[in-house]
Length: 235
View 1 (cartoon, rainbow, N blue to C red):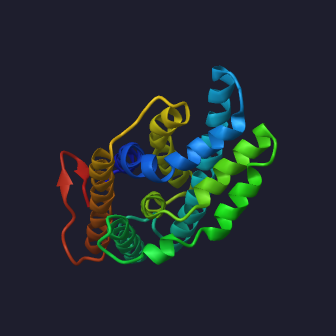
View 2: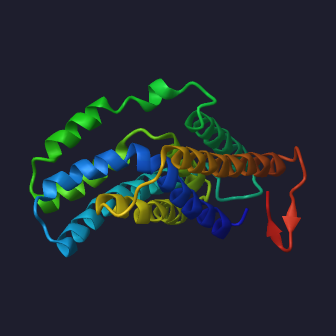
């Protein structure tokens, strides 16, 4: 799959995930953050929420850049090398495992519930000033355990360079902005059944990307043939 398609897939996954999973899991946190804004007027409130989400996306991009640098060091940037094939295969398996856990198929909930310390730090951060507190809250939010985020990070790392990985994760984070901003501003409400369906759709979408990464790795190792479609290498 071309880098542009992977980045586009991450953007769509972020949007679907925010409509489903994030609105239910992060929505209450976003609303809690809003309680610290007091009687701030609408433009100021919007600016502070954007600062909050900027911190979240920035930590996503930093983590993706680190993983991308590691993947590039191991040879992931070389699509046809055996080492690059193994890296793609391992990343694809990781994406599949986290996406299956996110979908509730694999029992990795305990691992995902390991953010107690971060939750405690976030409560302390709420006592800080508005500007610095909102930015730090966003950064801590981005570090909370989340199967969908982990899947997206591994997918972004498969792009093979720090810059591309950061761009991919930035696209994922950007996709989550509209819904979470509207939740913070009190402009949206989704039913539980709709959130469930959209969350599952996001999980299935990123699962397909994981399968593609595995197929690309297997093709680079010579186990199967590469597949091209209209000049694009699907794997």
